[in-house]
Amino acid sequence: MEVHVAVLLALVLGSLGARVVGWLGVAYTDSWPEALAVGLALMFVMTGVAHFVPGMRRDMIAIVPPGLPAPGALVAVTGVLELLGAAGLLYPPTRVAAAVCLLLLMLVMFPANVHAARMPDPPPSMSSPLGLRTAEEILYLAAAVGVAVGGG
Image 1 (cartoon, helix red, strand yellow):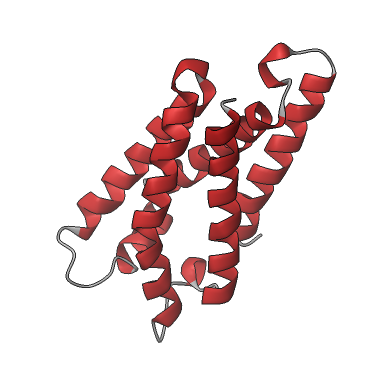
Image 2 (cartoon, helix red, strand yellow; image 1 turned 60 degrees about the horizontal axis):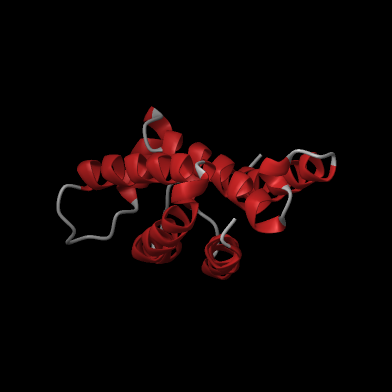
């Protein structure tokens, strides 16, 4: 399964699964914003961990736009931020702030996706077309907005 499909499925199925649990009476996910927070958290755990898995890490370092300093450190820092954001999404008092911070992080990291889409020979795990990357990004940003606005 391609990486982007797994990440998308984590968001969609994690959110749907959390909402079903809410319908079954678990107050923690008794609204869509709360369920979206769970799906986003699952997604960001996956992507955050990927920043430290050797093959994925290598591919992420390769797509850091030229001119940015210390690509390895940037990949590590963004991975940690994604993991912290995932934890923040799961803790109700920090949920909205985490969603806003992750939204900003996604916007800051998107140029790496643009760079990867324009590379003549991108790493296989990073070779999605720009249109697909952009559509996915819009969905992820919308989910973060849904959590932030919904107050989950």
